[in-house]
Length: 209
Image (tube, rainbow, N blue to C red):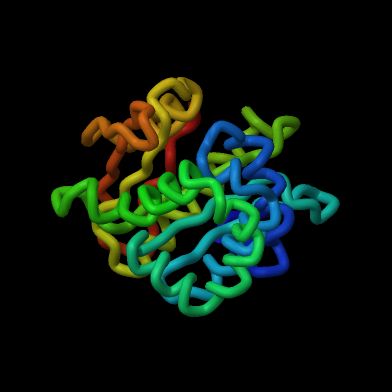
């Protein structure tokens, strides 16, 4: 386990949702609000296909998180089974907005639409508090996630990021991901990166910037 990094727990969900809104505020999931994101991040660690990590500062405050799935499609199904009613509550206000429901359907279908040539395992989201960016928190979170993927026997992992988000694209490249394909999601260009993992208990450390 990387120092200062702990597994994501349901008790961390509110902090993760807050960081998601601050750090990934242009995505569709952010538009669904903090209540939905909180339920989502409560679901991730209790689903067999999901896991994540949080970074804690010296006071014990969560200053970063990462959420992952062995299979995004399988995680969605497990989350609906385990916490579907809780997740549905915050979405009721969107039921009369066809555009939102259409984008939600597109999000649920995304894992099957990108094709079988890409790995099912995925880094779903990562966010770091603005005051802690540039200090290696993101890399430590990614290292912990890649270690866990390798421990679970996952060979390849993908991550999707908006093409216009240049800092995020550069971060994934520094972490060893390579551009696998470009995709249009919700009408916007998205880059999908992949990384192959050595099959051992611990992956090679991400080099410093």
